[in-house]
Amino acid sequence: MIRKALTLSIIVIFSLLVVQSVWLYKVIINERASFRAVSEQALHTAITSELDSRLKNSSIISAVNVEVLKSATLDNKRHNIDQRFTLDSANLGAKSTLKLSIEQVFQEFLKNSDPINLDSLGKFFLIQLSSTGNSTDFTLEYSDGQNNIVNKNFDSSTNISTYSSFVVENYLNASKSMVLKAKVYYPLFVYKGDFLIIGFASVILLIFIVVAIVLQFKMLSRQITLAQLRENLTSFFTHELRSPLQSALSSIEMAEMYSDKPEVNNFLDLSRNKVIYINKLIEKLLDINKLEKNKVNLIMENFPLMESISQYLDHYFGRKDKSIVIEPLFDDKITVYGDRIHISNAIGNLLENAVKYSGDSVHIKILAEENSEDLTIIVEDNGIGIPPADQKRVFERFYRVNSAEHSAKGKGFGLGLNYVQWVAISHNGRVSVESEPGKGSKFKLTIKRG
Image (spheres, one colour):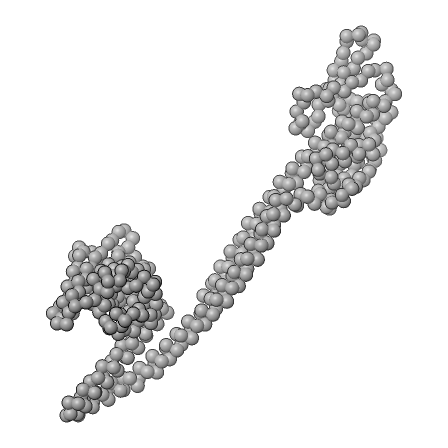
């Protein structure tokens, strides 16, 4: 049992870890994707700013008036920023204009005379990243298509980058000969935020589960040890007492045969009854132990419910010490699927308790409720009832209601209702009780069909 519980607990913990790992992985992927999108947008803006600074300081195009138009209608979410440039040429006339929407034209125009400045570009990129709260380390590499390659490393002041990175490649001219590559390192903050909250909560939850499982196993192990000890003691005493009690019973019966004195016979009869009482206790203990260990072979069959009750109707009929009325209130055609002997014994235990813990006038109703899944046998009496505090424990082994009224009504072993419970469980059913002191009890024995 402990091995099964341990295996199940390990599976549950492993499944939880897998789910949390997938969850955290997706959080990191989303954070990285968001940071990459922001970085790409910032780099495009930095390239435009760096080009604008070169255009303003260029001596080659001083004859041409260049104005960078910042249109309010531009979509900031586009990866290719569409900057508009207006060129007014004196040779073309005062009102003649040529509009170019391709920024790469100017990159090509300034490639040789005023090439891209990585220091300036890096500063603009750092400014853009800082404005969005995403400072990190990065490396810029520029190739002009003529085997000239320039590299430049930039470190953020916060120094919070990791070794994981991504590369953004930008073609600066129309022929794609001018290439700017930015290797951007993921900062540590992509692992913060939701990641830290989820990770911290997951660790706390995992620790809590492990501690709970350890405590549960300790309690379970202790209960199993106590149950095994109780079972061993019960088995030892029942087997050890069975033989001497049987010998004592035989000796008492022999003494009764050869004794002629009434006084002696009275004592012998009393002794014989006590020995029979103890023998019955031992037999019930052995039966319950077998049922708990699944060593009882149930003979499953369909049989009329009335057959399980008719024998008790004859048994209690004509009893002189009490007025007993047992009233079957169900259809004679109702059948039960189960072990005929054990189900009959379980019903017999319920009827015996109903008679024992009632007054001089006993009225017992036996009802049956059935559906496609199960059959419920109800035994309702007008007895002294069971206190609410005892109703949850009446099915425990050796438990007896601790009240003067119950003790006065009769002695018992505290095994009858425990036996009824095990009969119900062995038939994939259940047993319950509804009772009110002074107004009787209602026991429900439910048995699964087929």
